Length: 75
Image (cartoon, rainbow, N blue to C red):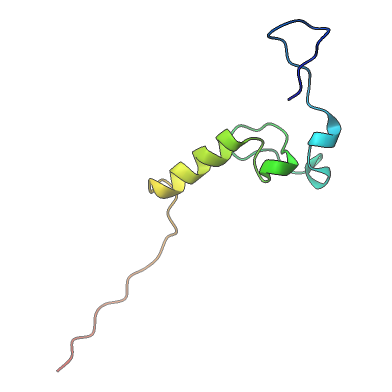
């Protein structure tokens, strides 16, 4: 997000449309927070949301289901 010098300190302007991924403007929002996706962090809106997603994968929150095959014993 860019600072708006007219708005004063601490106020941020809305993201410029050029900063939002062109193919994602009307597509899916960020999977973590629901904000519009930004090109530099696609498919997320920010590095923070990308890090949250990575932490969920590394922490085992996201699991790909699999069935274990019974072990065959060698005779």
